[in-house]
Image 1 (cartoon, rainbow, N blue to C red):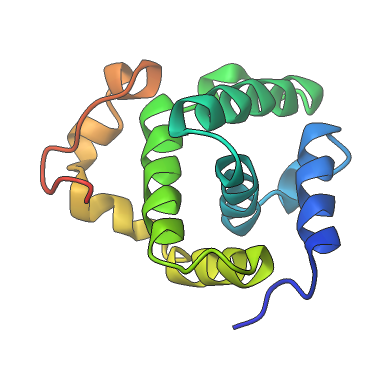
Image 2: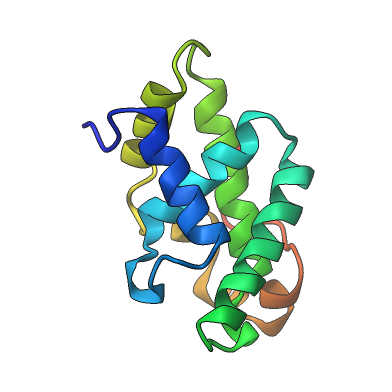
Length: 138
């Protein structure tokens, strides 16, 4: 499936997130994946995580959403999945790679293959990275 025709469309999603010009209700799972791919394009997971976390806090603050909505384990989990999906693609076309990532990771329920609901929604998992309790991330 084609979500993006060119890199400018991807960059527009990233800029909308970073500049908080995207409405909070318009920043969906697909947008999160797109920003993650953009950040991971030239960064390690750790560097991408810092950018994503800081961007999410800025986005939440700008839109008047409490920071308690932020979930560190989910943020790192999705970055790791995006990194893994990107590693499976021959790095020749970032638009194609991003489209593949968005399509492959579209189902948000995949997190429950790795985490029990009890662990995932715990306060500790919201505050800091917790390893999966059901299935490791490959």
